[in-house]
Structures are given as structure tokens and as C-alpha cells.
Length: 342
Image 1 (spheres, rainbow, N blue to C red):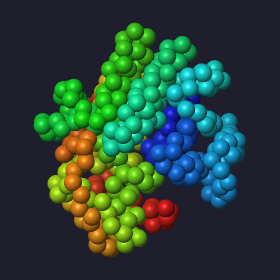
Image 2: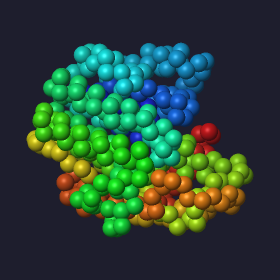
Image 3: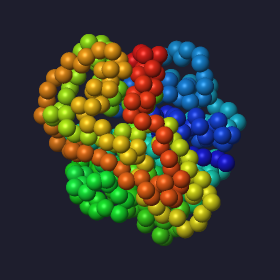
Image 4: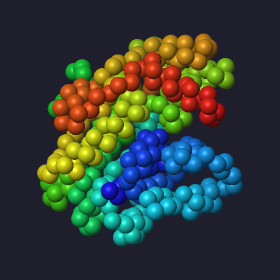
């Protein structure tokens, strides 16, 4: 099968690309190497996903990414340095390839930055996503997996969060863009018969995790004996989901789409295990073997108090069965981090 993956050089995307290639498929990777964090991390993600061990000699961003695109091209893999806001650029890619399924992971991520740059989040997460659906319509691509987010639940009072819960009260622009994506996606399913699964990811972590996320940031700062920013009293809680379980959920969603017609589903992918910020830090300290030096800060606007996934629907529809508890997941992350100093 031929899969187009947007954001295929990012954290989740690079793991998905790696697994699709291992399973014998062809992958078209679209990534714009956004400056949200150092592009060199995405270069390394790409090389890891392709099992390329050689050192990459960095010069400047444009040259490096073009070189990466050229050097990694093969019969079953091609990387395009492309922004999803550029519909004409995307159209050229769709014209050059037969695409069976689109897996759309690219987005401007982050709750707090979205409050500072809401219009840019709309451009990427809504307009950019709609460009992909327009091209799927034009090129008659009928299977689409889309990354949504647990952030759409906001401060939902009902625990755990189920897909049938009302999500009309987002508390950040990022969450609002993800909710919009679910709604507009249903329009394209209804009008143009694009089979679609929207996956609400719950706080994904593991090797290659983005450096701005708490587990990665805390691990780095604790290892360097630096202060960690600690927001609130530590009672905020997250349903942390290990990367291997997320990839398993995406692959099973693809399989479900390929085997069924007239599909539009929203599905939670979480671990169904809630860990407080205090507990997360304690596990990190134990695993790293160092105590954290906390800089106490107030809760930030847009942060939710708690996330907790009801994964009944995921188990029932796609056979999702997460298998990595938090302690083991942190152990695997720290082992990766120590072997890949940031």
C-alpha cells in the first residue's frame, strides 16, 4: 500500500513511518520542519525512522533538508519539504503519486503557544488540513486518518472522557482548531464519502518525544542539575500514552478503514491510567537517579486539570490494547534520552 504521512519527521510521525516501512509499505512523508523546535531533531528522527546510522553533517536548514530529501529517497520512501498551507505545492505531490491512505499528523502543536499565535494555528491546523481534504476529494482518495487531541475535552467534569461527551467548550485555540478539524472532516465524509477516523491522542510520550513537552524537558533539566518549571501544586493529571501504543492504535485504525466502507469515527487513544504531575516527577527522579530542583509557578491559562481516556470504543472497534505502563514507558524514554543527548 502507498501511504502519505504528514508530519512524518516529527515525534509520532517518524515512529509511524518506521513501522509502515517495516511492514513492507511505501511512504510519502510531507513535513515542513517548522521552527517550533530545532529542525536538526527532525532530521535525526527521519534518519532513525529509516534505520540510517551514518552521521549527518549539518550546514544550514534549507541545504540540510534538501540533502536529506535526496539522500533518503528510495523506491518505497520519499520525503517532501512542504508546508500544508501551500495547496499548490501539495497538489504537485498528489499528482506524482498514487496514494491509498492519508495519515494526517502534521499540526502546530502546543496549548500555550496557541494562545500567543491563534491566527497561525488556524492557518495550519484548519486551513492546512482542509487543503488535504480538498485534494483527497479531487484525487478520489477515500481513506483518511487524522490526529485530533484530548485537549478538545477541555475541563470536562465527567471522568473518564468518552467520545460521546460534549466538547463544545475548548479552553485554548489549539483545542478549538482540533475540534474544528473533527467537524469539517465530517463534512468531507458526508459530501465526498471519504472514510475517516479522527484519533484523540492523550499525552503521548516515549523516544523522540518533542523537547518542549514536560517529560522530555524535565528529564533534560534534571540531568543537567537545572531548575524545572513546575506549574501549580502538582495535582494536575494526565493520561500518558506510550508511543508504541499510539502507533499500534494508528495502524489498527488504518486496517479498519481499509476493511470497511462508510466510516466516520472519533476514537480516543490513551493508556487509561492517570498520573499526577507530582507522580510523574517522582517516577522521573527515581529512574534518572537525581532529585529535581523545582521552580514553583502558577497554573498557566489553557492548561486542563485532568485528562483520562475511556478507551472502550477503541478496544471494541479497532481492537486497541495498550500494553506499556507508565513506569516501564519512562524507563524506555530515559534509556533513549541518555543514549541521545539533546
